[in-house]
Length: 565
Image (cartoon, rainbow, N blue to C red):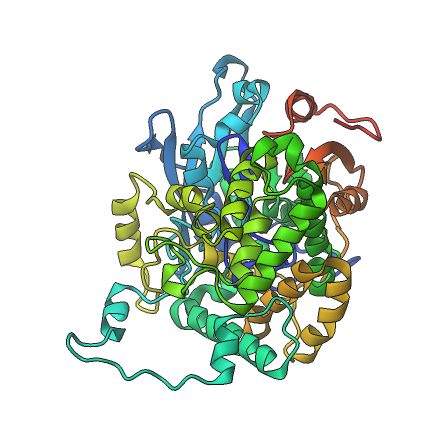
């Protein structure tokens, strides 16, 4: 169960997504791939039917945001049938190297997710997360992965405006209230640990509805948005940029994308940094327990170190008081949603239920330096009867990501008009939730029957408490999802140069142990340990992390074993 990770300038952040969308991230993807030890296919770029894609050159124009250039990349929707006319058209953005006389080339990054748009993140100033040495020597480039953000077509699990209007009751016609049943009550106030048959039935029903909605509105592209296909797009982008080898940095989910690229194109890697790593050898249940335990540890860190970081705003005088307050809020919200103001986004749901409260607390663990103080104030007010601030912690993120990619709407309409009639409806401005669910479910195999999920509840509870049980329940959406062809596996990337993995000891979303494991799986893999709190390190871990990562990216300097910041 891996929550989405999204980025804004200089910080690793995330929107507070509903737990239904907080699913497992992996480097496994849809589409058959040789198993460990099998011979790999010939270089895809040599295929005649892929030459039109590999031969394209990007046409750069000024973005709507000063200082950035924008372009669009066309990739085949189905790499098994690239000549059938169906494509994705992906937004690309770049910030030119500040020292052009000493320019090395392009550095491509992925900000995380899945579901985060790279092009829009760059226009929001993501290049400032890179060290001065890197910005001087590289053009900083990013793109919206297939199905994400400004991609055409893009994923959506919601009806378009015309459908939504058609579903609304006619003016003056009142709908008869449905008779409330015990199962409906259970579904309205979802427990963090569904123990009863009614609670489990409601959870499974809600997950099936979510999957059905995505199938209805994005069916034609759902099987084509996996990470392995996105990695192939990354190689097309490399060629379109005129680069013989790829220099890459991926945060969080971006480590899955980077790992998938290194496995498919190991000899095309110049340098690769994977920050906040995801271990591809873990199955869905192991991932749930790994990440859930990470969040539980981070909440304990918050209780223990709140006074040090958040000062007088802490909602308790001791770690015990803070833990008790959080537990009290969970219990209250399971009985009845916590009250919010009328203008709160949670008002239409009657307040914040337990899953929403847990999600808000968990998301605040990503950047303690920014989020612990407002979290503390929000928890205090929620305990006093007003959860409005707790529900609004992610408002800034939604505003940033909900903005339309400037300067591209007209191009998107033109591209949309060229797509076939079976396309998805136009997605909402921020389709991150849909992309998160779609990519996660396609990337990692999930059981089709309910029993494995219920069997996982007790071990998850033992390992991570409500963070674990809520995580297991969140995985239910993937039960009814199209499945991909990969399985959990150790990295196979013979011939790849030394890859630098960065792990943060107090990372809530991508636990440090997974970074250790991924570094060990790469031939000559290197591990940089950042001793600190929060999610990922480069761009927020201080001068030590910046210096070591920059030296590797620019000069390809190797790190000594045990390197720590």
